[in-house]
Length: 462
Image (cartoon, rainbow, N blue to C red):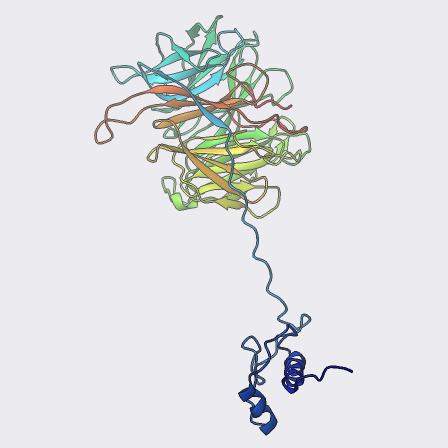
């Protein structure tokens, strides 16, 4: 004979099932009290709605296929740029450098730096800074030379680097200092360059225009570019003249379109102006002269780049094609073929260098700021990213030099003028090395092309 089930047990079961059907969950519940059962029989049980349930008149969630749809995940930020620069030694200098160039002038396989530096009288003189494989330099005695700029190249065909001294202090002139061995130079006579004076005349570019195995020269003047043809043994004669805007500060040469002919690229401080002496810096421009046999076509393409002062050519993304990199007061501009120029906002009032400096594919763009005493390193391998670090003291030049001569990535060498007099403190010139400790680069990396590497110390391709 079965046991008679208590009436409140049946009520408890009915109450639980009602809640389960209403969506309140089917977890077991405590049986209701006698008062609760009495309310249930009278039909005046208060409404039971789970606090988690929305009210009946609340709008339903939109279906997954509604136009609004589920919210998209925010884009993931690019990872921070990881630099592989390590502080090396700083060599204090007796003479304050104004401008310089890098290359092995002593013939020992170690890259050196040759600077135009100030003597106590305010005159400029050639100073050889002999490189060592620990990142230090030995400052040699100065050779009075004058000038406003300097470049290194084998101009006389004897397999050592000579110095081309540029002088824009009056009518433009050049002077060759022949390397007689081990970095001992003999100054040749000044030679007039046809053109207006007034240009900066700090730098020049080299290329063999006529295929005779002698390096010809391109110098930027006040309102034009002038080719100087090398007729052997460093005998330079005026050649092609190309018109650009006022103050072409910097030039670079390379095959940008893959046709086997080098193109000439320059940046100028202003555009073409209607008046002979007009000057509008807001129209600073990038000029690109297509190559032809023995020189360049006279009609360039022009891109306005306010504040541009330096230019280099480099294969930034290791795709086998050179990009144009320009820097100046408006930051860095990158031109890839016919694409729209890309601009990166960084502080720039010093030199430009393209080399390896971060754990990224391709090459990085290094710019400097005198006032901030900092370097900005920009990678464009993916989205443009920039990292900053302290570097140098009024850097006037930057070079890519394989200091250790181990065939890996080139190191970064900074030629520091030191701050001027008050209010920046006492001059403290020097030359400092930043060692580059990046992992071995990916196969297919090309050498950078800028005015510092073609005849000097290129970034090596592994």
